[in-house]
Length: 170
Image 1 (cartoon, rainbow, N blue to C red):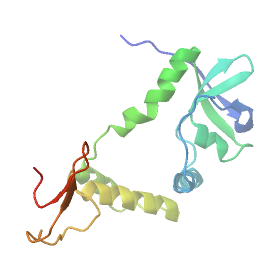
Image 2: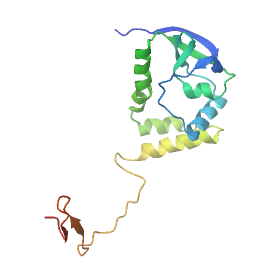
Image 3: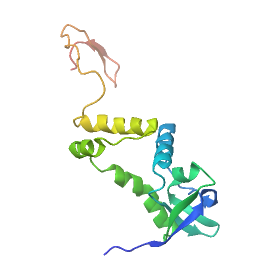
Image 4: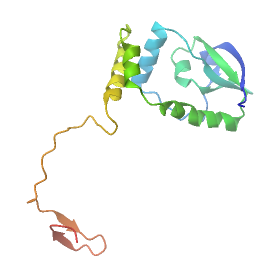
């Protein structure tokens, strides 16, 4: 049986939330644009995780959402976590989600006919589709490599004595 650590759901002005001093995530412009676009088209459908500290509410998860508009009233889940537990959640929350695998067929079915007005969302979804279409280990690099020429002379150097020779390593 798992403990329920959620104390309450409330709405708090983004500027009143304190960033975690342990936040290790950075948010590139592409991610900021995509989130801004989803919030513009759909709105909030997820809450920011916060914990109570003496100075107010400290963010556990949701730093980017709260940074986009400091005047926005954002939904927050107040959780009953001490500092150590908050660090545990902060260290694992996003990485556990990133472990999920893509079902390319289900993704295609989900996206069929789905449209967004915002270019940033469409670019993000296109990238997800391209990634899902790749086989494991496949890269975006060239797939046509020249044959190795057996006549190429290769230089080798012994790391201990610095002796140099050509051809096959000994």
